[in-house]
Structures are given as structure tokens and as C-alpha cells.
Image (cartoon, helix red, strand yellow):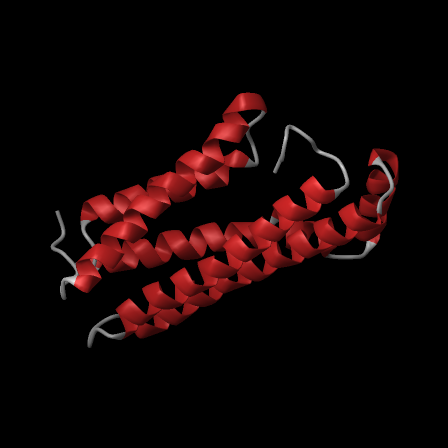
Length: 182
């Protein structure tokens, strides 16, 4: 999350984190729509759909919490040193680091992957659409483990794959069919 190659306090930090917060809120809409498509089928595996949607929403909640902590710290800190101190204080609160930064966000990846896989198995999306979504999800998931230029490329590449998959779902929905599995 580097606006202008900066990883410091200020307007760029706040703007970037605000955009991320909004984008993850939009993922909530995606999760609800994917769940709705499974639920609409008579033999759709509604229990699995509820569980995987709940897992994805838990991940979204963790990421939203992370963005809020980052925003508060970034806006309160005078400089990088102060920012580091404020993050250390936030991480001293039991559960903040593992829930919001380490384990919690993984739930979004797991939930989305399960929802797209479920839709592909039900033939509500094509294999191509599900594969694009899964590749995008994997690329986004790898972003946190990568470094340097690779890290900066993974998120947009993953987002692009997900956008293509979601566009395919939108396109087939407006034509009245979900598309055959390929």
C-alpha cells in the first residue's frame, strides 16, 4: 500500500487505507452475491454456502479492522518512529495482531475460493471463470509473502484476474444464464 512510493504517515497513507477499506467492503457485496447464487439452487448445498460465506465475511471483518487500526495509527503518528510505537501499542492488545493481521485475512481467501469452487461444481460459473477467480485469489494471498517489485505486482495481477471473473459472472447474469462449465 504505497502511494507515491511512500510508506509513511500523512495524506497518502490515509487515502490509500481509505480506498482499501472501501474495496474490502465491496468484497462483502461479492460474497453476498456468490452466496445468493448458491442458495438459489434447489440442491445448492446451503449449509456449505452459509459456512463459506461466513468465513469470507470474517476475513473481510478482520481486514476492515486492520485498515481501521492502520488509519488511526497513520493519522495519529507524527513520523515513522511514532508510527512504529503506536503499532507496537496496538499489537500489545491481545488478539489484534493474529486476528486482524495474520490469521483473520486468510479467511477471506479461503471463503472466496470455496464459494467460487462451489459455484463451478454446481455449474453456475464456467471452469474458466472459477479458475480466473482462484488464480486471482492465490495471487492476492501471495502478496503478503512477497517482497520488492513482485509484491507490488501480485495485488494488481490478482485483482485483474478477479475482475475478469466477476465481469464474466455479471455478463452471463445479464443474459439470463450462468454459463456452462467448460
